[in-house]
Image 1 (cartoon, rainbow, N blue to C red):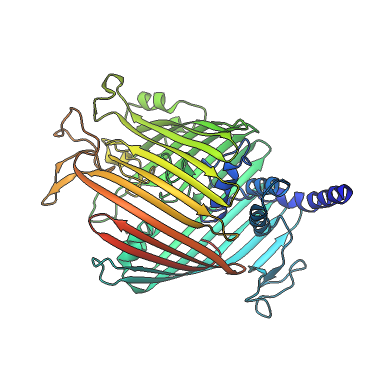
Image 2 (cartoon, rainbow, N blue to C red; image 1 turned 60 degrees about the horizontal axis):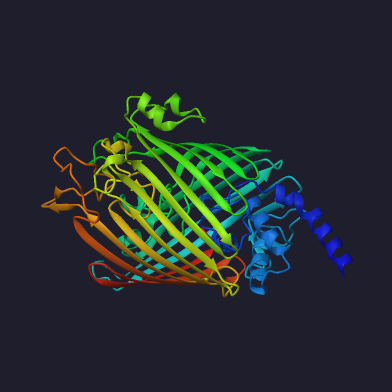
Length: 547
């Protein structure tokens, strides 16, 4: 018996070690594997790793899944889920069907298996050092509500596109995803309000046209060094619901990153391009719009012992000038540079930590320091601007994960006297899922009934102190808007947290999903929300691939 296990293991690693190396490209954050990786992290399978900086490479995810798959103490349910994802990432054998055949894949979609359980590609090829995948993407999506403020109680959209990804010579990864969609019927504003990415899409939300998205990146790996260039959704900072450095509700942006990664340490430098506010708000797009340059520069030092991660982070936003060479040096202290450059820019720093005191339990937290005057701590001084969160997550031996989180963002945090330098991308907050002068508590429960999507319950209670307007004019500024810093006429003394127009929101969410046949997924979400009034929202998504 032992002999057979040893021989099987040797065959497995011989056949698939080459494939593992040829997985340099990133896995997009829309993949449901990240929900399951939180469970894997809780259970201690991410030694010298964490989920605080996303997305991950395919080979990173495969390495984690293989570690779980080889653990003889893993539960039957987890074993099935891990096996599913190892097939999804081509680390375990799976039958494929393609549009364009080659010597590896001869089953054609149009002649058989269109509705079968084989993995579906337009084209696919893999060898020991290269791989390429071209997949079709389709999505039919519907929103429903009883909210009477909309012209219609539903919204139906249809999307389509392709995803190209792969690796060359075990070192050069590439990824391109392009989709286009349109509203078929119903209220456009309902879709905009219920999906963050739609509200950020200029053509769809402002020009009332079609809906197009593109994300792409290239990545080069060579031993300890890596470099990436691309436009993608990123998360930075640790937590359950909340990421205070680069939030999970922020838009994708273009950036160049350089990094050095070792077993228990990683350093990354990033210089990115953001979209600033138009100088004339009446001409916000088109050939005659004037939009100044805006840049984000960050670096992060992450120390990764076996029990978790502690990372130091620093950033600067600067605008209305060309790329500043002072910020191109990846080994520098941005705060001092910002002072040396005449204190024009918006600098921040922070720390985040993931601690696993025991298997199944994790403690997560982040602290962002925007500005501070030590002598005014505790006095509600407007310039003491911070954001932080703390969370605890636990995975039971049963297929159940539980988490709780609290987060708070002080007034005026992320804002700047020069509004161009606010911590925003196209006026949308880059960090945090809540606005300045806000807090929230959230509870999450996942039950892994199927291989791909958990049955998920979430409760979120948010409080926000909004600025007060009268006849369209700002009459009381309490630091509740990232695009509105403190003005000369605003008071200098203490500001009570949650002052202004206090808005309380409670959200109850229930979601579930199922892979009907290979690659064809059905997901459903229900949300009950109380704000000014109580409303119900439903969302149903049918997708070919997750995107």
